[in-house]
Image (tube, rainbow, N blue to C red; front, side, top):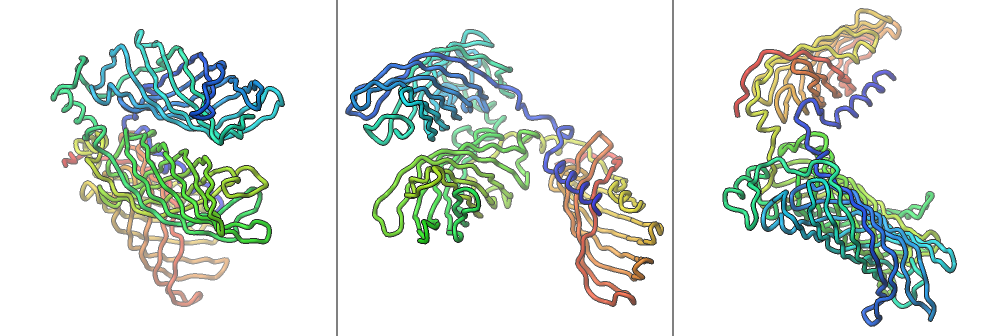
Amino acid sequence: MRRKLFISAAAFLLAVLPSGAQWTDYTFTDNWFGGVSVGANTTLGSLHQPLQGPGTALGFSLGKWTSPSFGVRAGLHGVRNKFETGGQNAVDFFAFAHADALWNLQNEFFGYNPNRPFEAIPFMGFGVLATRTGSSGAYALELAGVAGALGNYRINDKFGVNLELGGILSRTSAWTYTGSRVIAFPYATLGMEFNLSEISFPYNRPVRGGRATEAERKSYEEMYLSDEFKGNWFFTAAGGVNTVWRGGSAFSTGTSPAVSLSFGKWFTPVFGARAALNGISNKLYQGEVNLFNTFLFAHADVLMNVHNIFSPYRSDRIWNAVPAAGFGVVATVQQGSRGRELEFGALGGLLNTIRLSPQMDLIVEPGLILSRASAWRLGGRPVLTLPYGTLGLNYNFGRQGFRDEVQEENRNRELQMFSIGTNLVDYADLVTINADFGMALSRHFSLELQYRVNPGIADKNISTYSAGFRFWPWVTFSGWWINALGQYQDYSMQESGSNGSRVGGVLGFGYCIMLARHLNLDLGVSGWAGYRMSVTDGDGGFVRADNIYCTLSYVFGRKQSGK
């Protein structure tokens, strides 16, 4: 049994990751870039105070263009600033690690052109700011935001000159400054950008200046099946629960209702973004008093579909796992108080979408919201964590979809008509000899026959006969599957003296990986329920585990699948 559990865990890990051998890989390695820059930054405490400084600015970045118009990057910015506080000049050293979303305006409004000499690229991001005050040597950590614009001048296919104008916004508690609650650091840097891999996109557009022609737009839409800005939008409404964690085992006394509303867009099969609002209340102990807080968290998130990284985009994929990370502002109102607190906050979650129809998805999202404890008027640990879980519906609007290479291949591929296999896990279970036969009935359904027998090893003699059908959402003998079988079993256990027969129905699910043109690896689990007839155990119903699949199958007999 332990062997079965071990093999089962490995089987499910493999099943979650789509097979690269089965389909052409998505071009994840293309369109990467890096940069280094140097310049100056200054300090803006409020609109009524002049700029102070300047200080030394140094920046490093690594990013990727996910489409001609949209990209993401990770950056590190520093290194020193100067300002006046309390009548004295202060010098602080800082490092700001951040993640940004990029928007190429020329490619958005005038069409993709890899040879364009100059490009204007607004950006916005968030991250963590670390500071050290020169006079006291004290360290501080704060969440911070950044926004600005890049001006890229192309030198050749590998290099470009980069001018960046932007500003970092953080709470003044990260610094020795006392003039206001929020402080801004405008900066300007000049540097070099390096294309680390080929910068191109897998569709043909004539290289020319000016606005795109109708023929160019048609070529563009044939690739993405939608206008890049107007298509692939979504709206989500969800409800659930949240709690409070202050470190150690200090959870709140209970859960509170959570509500989530979001509005977003997929820019490519892999990357998207959303604007969201989370709330609505929580409760926690402060001493012996149970406090109730009303809160709202407005945030912007970056989304990444991990399935579409490891295999091409599929419009009919049933389940997608989408990590989400974001940054925003938390507003809180404590019970019995009219005062309102504002703090920066961050979010990390795992968005799970289950496809119900082309326009509707079921959403399950667990995650964490992080903010400073001062937003909740609490002492002790400086950071407060709010775990949450929500369940809701996602509505897709605008023209949906990207070019589905997998469906195009499935429509034109030759189906394998038959499969013959054996379950390797059964041999680990006291050498249970077994065979599995499948026959494609259509593009999505197959007939399934199974036989298993344990020939009296370890005083155990079991014979099992199964027949039924298997549903393949993608195409027969490929990808996810669900099976339903009728099953009959004779059993005799000499050690326990138990013997009899069982009859019932089996339900199972799994994933089929194509190892070679005629060789598949089938992973899955099943359970069954029915009626037992036994002199030793008595007659009656039963529900029990049936099998763990790690089946090696030979597939053969080709037929054109059609549409």
